[in-house]
Length: 509
Ligand SMILES: *[C@@H]1O[C@H](CO)[C@@H](O)[C@H](O)[C@H]1NC(C)=O
Ligand SMILES: *[C@@H]1O[C@H](CO)[C@@H](O)[C@H](O)[C@H]1NC(C)=O
Image (cartoon, rainbow, N blue to C red; front, side, top):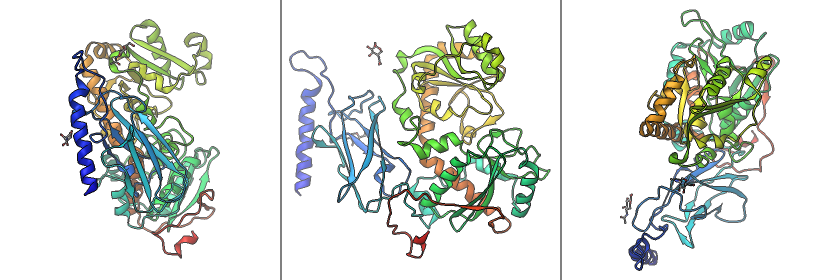
């Protein structure tokens, strides 16, 4: 009762203020717009206990007294957010990111698990609509071993799509039956001598692994991700190889008994099953941790508004492909269209005199001072594409045989402007973009929308999980711990946590 009447009074206040907030009675001019706490909106998966990603997140939309959403920033301090355990003390690393379009991302990372949490969002000294948000279920931190036993429940909690991902469907279509004994023997015979691979068996949610080859440092990404998944959900029993190198491996055609090998990059010329790249895999795990460029931070660092961006195409990167040198040449011929330069010489060191000198690195976020972003292959696909799509510039994408796990969902002229592999039409495409401002801007917005819906941390977890699940269904026998495999231990550096999902017998894990 008292809550209702208080709400009513504050609402009334909002409406009264609305009359005088917009027009100044003396000058008649619009006054500065003010955020109305009761009309501003808070939503997003980070308000739920079981949306367990390393950096949890939700959103705030600033709304004024006339119930109009802000489309520009109401100021960096428009909202004050507090995220803490319901009882007791706790350290929660919280950040509010201004997306500069009237909305904010709130993200937070836990260092321990709590039986419940309280999230407050205020503007001035008033609670925003719905605040405080109380989470009364246990909230587990990233390091807590507490796998959800019901896989479909976890998928629902993580907001995974129920339909099969088109890339997974396509990749697995040529592997209706996976014979694990043959896989184990032939993969080692054919690839282990000249390539670096990890052979994994996951049995009863424990991860066993054997590496093959010399350069196996990148196992840190696959180990870390598999362990993180196993802490969150009971994984299917499954045995597979991950290729740790850049290039996909399996060149055999579908009717020549190809091997199902998981790779971080796919290509039209190989049969490898594509995983999210190690880059986005790591940034998913290390958001608010080791990395500064991730799918959330990039949303708050998209540079000036469209009208104030430089009307040119931009590119920086290293010399990992001939076309990149050609791009630098084009940029010198047409500096009013393209600003492209190399930041490092390695593959074409002897051509540094012609294509150099190398320029200093600039922050990725500064790329978005330009309206158009060139995404050109390196050794394989350029793994920056998820971040470029998230910005509010238009991406020009190189035609390529290489692809990441989400490329099949992108449409040319909807999410990006395509250009030819030999760059022969790049100048024309940039000129088109410069003279079709509205269309180019729409493409940028579509791309941003796509990235927000398909490339967030939960989407990456969902993809890996669905892939393992679908792959597991195709195994013709049970996975086994092969000779030479070692147990990949869960990290011991987390604070002890009490998992209500496991029976005491499980907890010894
Ligand atoms: C304010 O706008 C939202 C959606 O934009 C709408 O759902 C809500 O009912 C509106 N509130 C008022 C008081 O008009
Ligand atoms: C563009 O830049 C000018 C000059 O800095 C600034 O006054 C204006 O507000 C900017 N426009 C937008 C939409 O941000």
